[in-house]
Length: 200
Image (cartoon, rainbow, N blue to C red):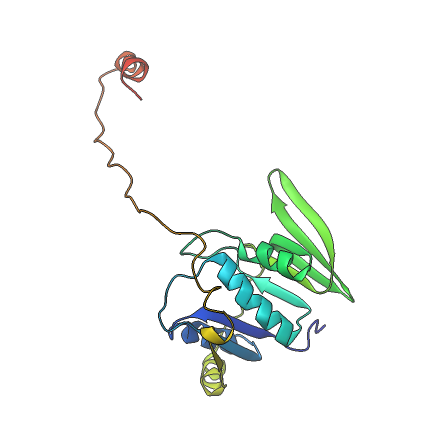
């Protein structure tokens, strides 16, 4: 049973983000929007949430899906921030989603088991690894996706100069301290002695 009328994908980033949008179109997405950041600077979750809010106001979706977390900042904050801005309910780390009329039932993986919650539409959901099995893309779909138009919006059209400024400044990056090499011991007694007296 078809649960939605249209699926729209969007990505914020440099030109290479278009490649990911093409993959989404090949997997069945109807339309794609590229929010182009020519400088390819790292955008923080609050900035992505503000961009998302502008798109939500324009597109008026019933369900907004996000990934679990980005692979750069690794923060998992954007869905919750967007929820606060829009007033929409949010469910994070969804492993199963069931849409019934005006309600969305979301199963979440939590420590010690599963939690099932019900949300009203419109709703925001962030996906967990086991939410679904990605659709197989055949050559025909890939070729058709190359012909589909992708709308491009300059990031400056959605974010003011003030909003584009970072809210968190990274002061320093450090590599973890190098680990010293291991040693061999001749007996369990020697092992226990070293663990007791030398291990930190």
